[in-house]
Image (tube, rainbow, N blue to C red; front, side, top):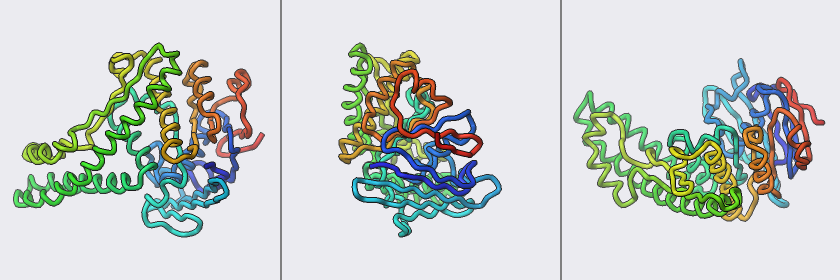
Length: 360
């Protein structure tokens, strides 16, 4: 599973771009704020319909333009696919696979499994729970279309319920209509809780082995799921908190409040881990993500490394690069010194300058 090429029109700082990628390692280098990350964002968006940075569609459209186009050519063995994406500033994006429009984002998921690793991901250990939930959901949505269906349904029901909670303060008669959204929230939420629990157990097992290799078995790592409530208790807790929800005008229990914790040598890495331990745990998580995709799909994912090598010391750089052999990797960096110094193999090199990409 590899990405062969990418074409952009009015995407971020690119008026036009046509670029091809090596099946192995492709490097995009240049000064900061020249457009390197924008290429990776386009690849991720075309693979998942969402920006890895959480950007809205209108924010990815070139300034003073009303729409943008992305075309990505991918290969899976002998199968070649074309993904076209049409971003619009005022309407929902349009997506087509091999020229056939799709109606649901779930139809796109699974064609290309893609993993992004950036300096922001190094903060997944120490940042708030929203970042960790986003990691869980993005990976599960790529691996399980049914999860994506339930995830979307849960978020829709949650938005409707929260809006209703706000309206009840003005019209108490609306209180009875909460039952409709409660049932939807429970049905979708129970599925999410179950799947997240299984996912965390599985990725923790893989991560534990990888972390041992990264630290020469000097440290242990366990990832634990911290659900807001368990599957069996969700219904009773949601109903028992109804009056509190009405007062606070928000839903106070459910998967939207889940978290996970990284235990290094039996201690919470967020609270007690050194910066080095936190970075190693984050690196472990990404490598475990790669292995999990391989295990679930039987195929290698595509890895996007966005200026992350400069954030890792040489030992962690080497460990990362040793563990991604055979995985198509697209790397951004400010210079080639580290690659030359460490004799790291790469196949294609592009210099990026003010939205102009030149192959070297």
